[in-house]
Length: 101
Image (cartoon, one colour):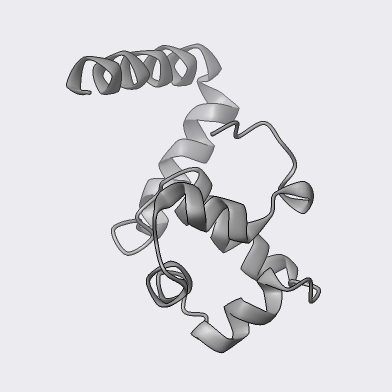
């Protein structure tokens, strides 16, 4: 899935279908009820926090239950103060992921 695409034009129903999940499975992963998710899939305006959770969990494939504040703080620190190291680590992580797949 193309993660450079702005989330506003990503159809949550299409994302859900691509992942092969039913509404309950898809929406419960971001703590949205099935009925609420159904309304969003039908075109109701999705609040920004829900859009961001959808992007993180279903587009970026981040397990938010394993993510800790300190992980984000370290990444932000590296990005700001050690950008070359951040880029190098990011590249290594991508390469390792490709090998694992």
